[in-house]
Amino acid sequence: IMTIPLIVVAALSFSPLQRRIRPVVDRMLPPRSVLTILMTDVANSTNKAVEMGDTRWRETLTTYRSTVRQGLRRFKGSEMDTAGDGFFAVFDRAADALRAAEWCRTTLHEAGLDSRFGLHAGECETRGEKVSGVAVITAARVMAQAQANEILVTAAGREALSDDPGGGFADRGLHALKGLPGELHVFEVTRARPIGLQERSA
Image 1 (cartoon, rainbow, N blue to C red):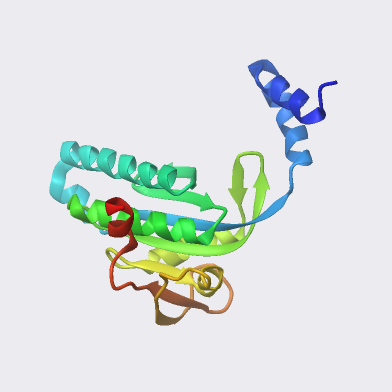
Image 2 (cartoon, rainbow, N blue to C red):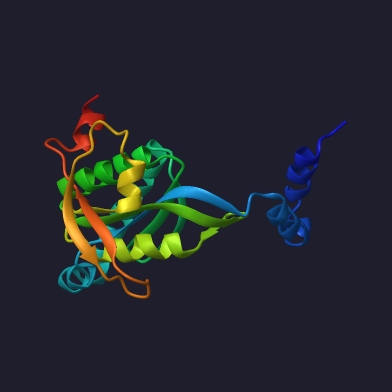
């Protein structure tokens, strides 16, 4: 006898039924999950776009997107959204999110492209393929505080990385982030040798 999950998968393979069945599937899935959220974009992107001109900037964005997507695949991340030069991805493990950020940072920098990253671990709204909630906003606001080639992590993100032996953090203090209550403790990821180099040479 076919189980309920198999019936759902089979039904979703028929596009005319997807619109009616998707709300039912969403109700069957866990409404909230604890995830590590990674936000990244190109540092000083507006200035770079003006300096490069439309054609070169478009080529640069193609390289950037391809590199980030390679990093997400390599470290088991899921791309949730992209707009312009910004990426929003989620990971089940905080260590994977950090390794993806460091690998992307190193690879992009070697290609002459500086980027910045924000990581936050927290409970998210999960409905179907959508991930949303205050945790997502928090990761985006933290990334906005980063300078070129910096990876900033919230206190919750740092706690999720506490069992990562390669982790090192510099205290960046408390920050009032746009639209969020109070102040958030932010840390910069520091390492003697970027993990991206280790991963690529392994």
